Length: 79
Ligand SMILES: [Zn+2]
Figure 1 (cartoon, rainbow, N blue to C red):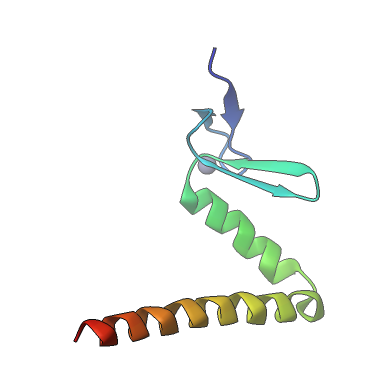
Figure 2 (figure 1 turned 180 degrees about the vertical axis):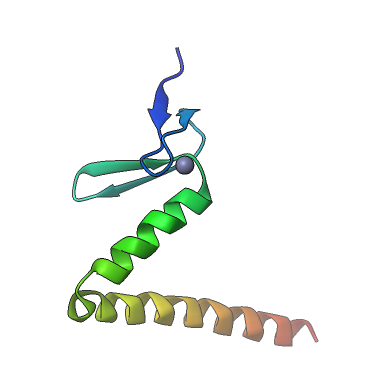
């Protein structure tokens, strides 16, 4: 039997394998859609202590900067 989860933002039920699941320090958070996950995570980020998350945000941005840089380099090689 497929397990069902309840979206913690809108209360909608959805089957296992769909939706978004995020685990933070052993606690699972379920969202039926990316929109609900975004709504929740945005609130978490805005409510969090900026001193705690600014370093993390910069690290993640650096990660994507690197990915974009590698993509740019890869496309240069083709030309
Ligand atoms: Zn939802």
